[in-house]
Amino acid sequence: MDHVGTTGPSRDLLPVTGAWQPGDPVGQRRFVDIAAHHPFAVESGAMLRRVDLAYETWGTLAPDASNAVLVCHAWTGDSHAAGRAGPGHGAPGWWDDLIGPGKAIDTERWFVVCANVLGGCQGSTGPASPHPDDGRPYGSRFPVVTIRDMVRAQVRLMDHLGVRRWHAVIGGSMGGMQVLEWAITFPERVASIVPIATCLQATAQQIAWGAIGRRAIRLDPRWRGGDYYDAPPGEGPWEGLAIARQVAQVTFRSDNSFTERFGRELAEVGEYGDTFDLWQRFEVERYLDYHGEKLVRRFDANSYLVIGKAMDLHDVARGRGSLEAAMRRIHVPSLSIGISSDMLYPAYQQQRIHELLTQQGVPSRYHEIHSPHGHDAFLINHDQIVEPIARFLDHVPLG
Image (cartoon, rainbow, N blue to C red; front, side, top):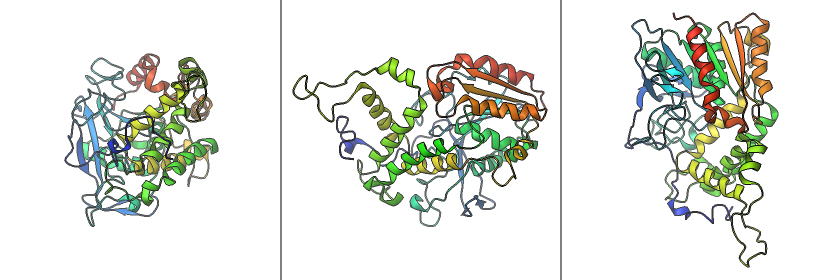
């Protein structure tokens, strides 16, 4: 892996982990220990004695708590769904165009909540968090968690906030997986759902993409079996994490978007002018290098592994007899949103959600984003989802 990033900044400038740590600027985060009164058990059988969830809220909760909306983030997202960049937040909210006064998810009407998932690295308990036994990062000791575990943790946050029932649960990609688990596992606590660019069960190809990324991190000698947090700057598993992100980035965009933006242009002139060099990069390679390094600076390699595994384990039918039996637990209005050019979670998967709900008489609508941008279109083409989401929220009865 010695060639990765050699044309970019020196590796001694790259952090061992991009995780938020106690003592870092808090920003707009709030925290709650959801295991303060009793341990939190995860599906893999482990017990967590302390589980902090970092979360943010926008708007005001109504006296009867009927206007609460939960927004669930994707793989490398966090609780900062809306708001400016600033201390504690390296970038504006990932859905800032949708959440706020007068926007699709109008914070003058809705009380909006977004929590960093269990296993994450931006304030919620994850592999980079201190273990209660010795104060050292969990590292390799952190258990496998599932999407259901993430949702069950959010239930305790919900109780902490005094919310009896979400008016809506909304999310894209991994966020959409959480949306579906909310409606199936806790149907009485959800009034409507908006799953976006997601699936009912991870497919073999989706698992395959995730497996390649995990292998890249595992083979990085600086990963050290997951216990790398005491390494000096530049000696963390940045190469493996960067490669994993580059693989994922390819699946987040479409062939057309790459072709139109980069073509076959070379980014660098060869050492001897017009001759070719083995490590001479194309423009698309430079783009991938940029995104790999960007993630290294704000994320944690172990969290990337843990969350990616949770996505691959996602299957709403697990332990519920069949897919149809699981979906029969959903009885609330749904707006499923697909993306025409999505190669990672193809539109047929969201259409399937819509079809299963319609077959059992549940009010359901399917909306498709027509975009050349691929899977990331739900984070880019906001103009195509503002109106459908706003109208859907308006038509779901309060209560």
